[in-house]
Image (cartoon, rainbow, N blue to C red; front, side):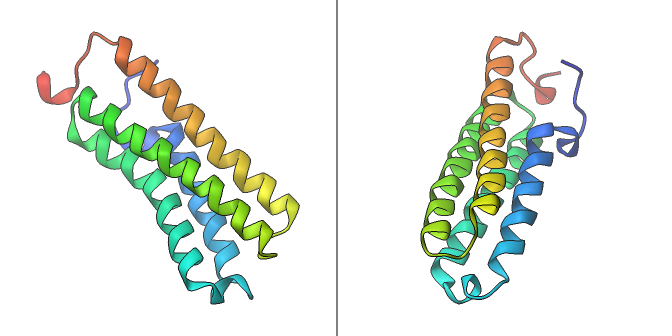
Length: 129
């Protein structure tokens, strides 16, 4: 695995950003936009999946980064659960559900892979150089 110098270079973050954009596009349409609670929750969880990767990376240490990657992974799972509510309520169609669900699942898997890599790394982070 190549050295990553910016969180924007992390594929999991890039995919989480795509997920946020997709979720946003769903939530600005009728009737989804009127379900204020679900809109807030799904935008928050998808944003958390993205933002925790960035925050953890910027902390500069593997242990903290791993902790934030787990939070991101959990938020991606939360987003998947909320997608079920969105489709069950008729806010999105099956194709939209599948697309967003698989993207959220990919974020989780990429986070898990990064966690595994960091756990086995002898490098402990940039703040320890």
